[in-house]
Amino acid sequence: MQNAFYFSSFSRLKFVHKNTSLTQQGGVWQKKCKNVIICATKVTLAKSQFISMNCDELTTVDNQSWLFVHAYVTDDWKQLPLLLNMYKVVDETIADNMTSLIVKSLGQHGGLRETNIASKLVCFRANGVTICHGVKSGVVIQLMQKHAPYLSNVHCMAHHTNPVVKTLNGLNLVFKIETLFTSMHNYFIHKSQMTFSSYQVC
Image 1 (cartoon, rainbow, N blue to C red):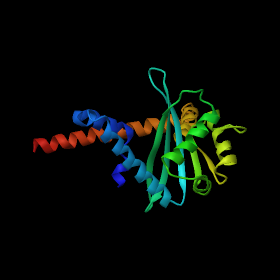
Image 2: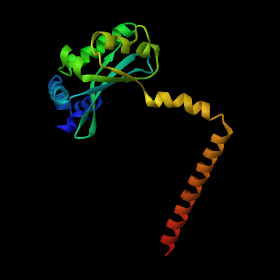
Image 3: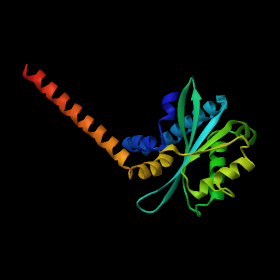
Image 4: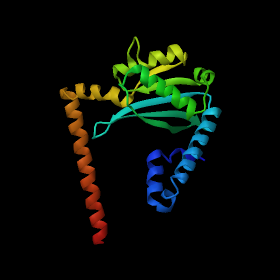
């Protein structure tokens, strides 16, 4: 059952396209795979006491905007990532649209009712854009006010760390530390190659 969580939409499409006989059936197998994943996701979210969410928007090379909605739960002290859905953003990307898509994902693909969302959704993670973290009408504020009163707002650690790293790179001390670690890395890489060569000679 756990393997179904990682059988993402991309993998599902690749699998169907590689099997022409399945594709000729009008995508019946693809729909069945999707139903299996949705059912497994609903069962997992129903058993979970708390749910964390992550939402990110991606712009393709042909300038299309896609919204990826993930949920994270803990099962036996292990974090399980669940891809709830991905939406092609047709309307203008504003906080209202994104909030409705998130709630729609939890309902249709997560099987959660409004009462379940209010009691289970405790964390929302996204990058620092105003759409998500706006103090007046951002996605987080709307979720807290309308759907999840116990929600905690978490700034994505990768995006949060990036400006810090850029700032620290200008410090002389940090430059010396980076140089030290680079030298150590190069030394041990070179030494391991020499050791391996000596073993080959013997």
